[in-house]
Length: 471
Length: 92
Ligand SMILES: [Zn+2]
Image: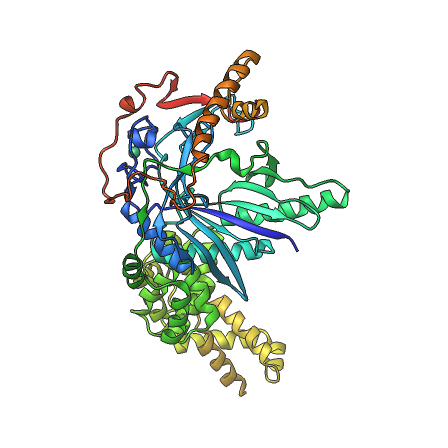
């Protein structure tokens, strides 16, 4: 069994400001170096002061992941020389003399398994590096944008309890859902969730793949590393401890800088940031104000709407999807039918376009209306499925759509009877066979559907055919 | 001692000449001896103190205006289209 551990970096992008200064956290799409101050530029003498809400968020995440919370918040300096960090150290957290992580020893449960959380750190993001003449590996020089420098991050580190790419994906999807339910991260935003992936296979050392940008890429990077390391061992080569870089476009990992051991970072408590006590009262207050978490929500959805546990779990994996379901359920009361539509057809279109529920253009009103039209027999289920992408992807109004495309169901008996008679007359053999075989009746229904441009009501058509054939 | 100086050189990303290594090695030796004085004291009953100030403070999550690009880059020697020009990050 391979052993996999993850270090997940989560942007606290729902904070309004950076971690240690009052610069805006809204840095994306700004002109370079227009969102900085002496603190996040790392100018000498500038004093960092912690964002109060960042501490609240870290405690919320620690509680959600069942962690032990430290008695005080202490920051350490992690030293390294790299162009993305002008003061030559990153303000982070460390377990050592006089310092500790904000939280440790937690657990997150996925299907039939508990993944232990080693620790949670609060730290600052470095500046953004641009490689103007090629890639990270080839560019002759770098360009630096400090707009991102100082954005608050949580680093969530697991024990190596994950054993397959699939488990890693499930862990990250659940973690993402927790972060979204807590409101600490808008995980759809560029770079909001990144991970360093540690993979080792039997007979080899641990290899770290740095800075993998999406859940899909984490899954692919692990698959790639397992295959690469196993192949090396089969060939009698050594898998040594090293750091690699994930090339998302080529789908491979490549070796990066030389080995760095822990002490090379020369951690020590940051003298600019005296410890801040985390009182029992503060934890109590935050516990009382915690929003509903995914596990509790799954349970509630099952009880409140009578849907299955599996259905509820899929909804809750994407908070916006579960929100959409519940908002639509306020307007449309056949909860099972609604869940069915959302989990099958609605979700299929989202997946098809590789977008998340938050990016759908459909309103709860539109979906409720669509299902009501179906219930009233104005449209058929076939038409529902046909118009759904227009509603999801373009925000179309069902009434308008159906009126314009003349997609209403045909429930005009006289007309339908005429079409049924025609179809039976044209295919006498099938009509005869249909008397003993319901499958052939369906075949005839299909013919009627085709002739009416899918507008015939299938149930009604079926009844008419049976009546005509005397079965 | 020369191992330690080599390590410090590597960590600081600087190149030292042989005579510099010797001089710095002597300085580092002196600094370590100075701190070793503290080790002579019996501190077994003293709680370590990591900060002279016992409690930090927090700041409200309210944005304030940032520096302009011109201000932010006023001390930067090499710039390009509003970016700071830095060295290559790969290899030597
Ligand atoms: Zn700033």
